[in-house]
Image (cartoon, rainbow over all chains, first blue to last red; front, side):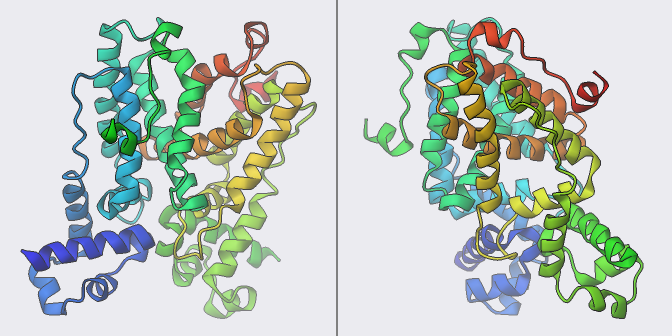
Length: 199
Length: 199
């Protein structure tokens, strides 16, 4: 089991660095420090490794929702920023979702799942009277999914994602007034995940 | 010259389809229908081809700015949607800018250039009294650059970019109220590029 895990982490490292097309079984073997026999005992193909990385990263995206609300939606975006900054499995999975083509036919499942997840928070916020009338939960969830994907790419290329929290604060600054009435906005706290955990 | 051009278009086609890492000189030769001799007469490496595609796409991004304003900033986003939908050179260049790693060290230049371009429109909008006091031109330009990058990726994976105009309309719906006062917003027209051209 330990070797298998080491291979999955090595694969995540290589996918994060080189993308799916740029990765190869031999690069992953070198990164993991395993022999060809050991590699093929656990994994037969690059595709199988990619699917394992995607499955494995879900262990890291265990956000403690609590009571879903607009505040928890904001918190979730900072949690994802933290997950990207701290887990190579999450970074690799996101890169695999962004760069499609050779991996297989275009598959929007990962994006649609995010939209569904975000909708849970937005529907709850609606129930709690936190959303303005004009907000369409599903269209805003799709906007947030797409915008987040691009912001983390830009942040990665510019600063290795060091400024991702600041970029998220800017995003919320420009969309919150359209989402929520002033008395709700006044209570929303913008805080990086580390600060939320310390609070 | 005609062969050279055919090779550049073929390279754009392959980069758009497979990304930089997934592309190869031999795939591009097959796509262009040229011999190895002919290929190496014009281009020595995949990297040289990528740089030529990026240089060449600029011919297609010749947006007629007119008088820069908030309306022209909105129009520019729909122009870029049209450019992505209609030009394989633009699609390839954007994919090369998004997927970095093997192509060379992370290079945010393309993103920063977009931020500078968008700032021209935002500074002009400020001069014209079209922006609210709290808007920071540079931070909003960076948000727009990142969000657009992600929205077009999601749109590409979900619908081959067929719904990109609708996604941009949603984006503007959620940010315009934070950007501009009501009397300015009332005059802003949301129109796909084809409709702007027909008007």
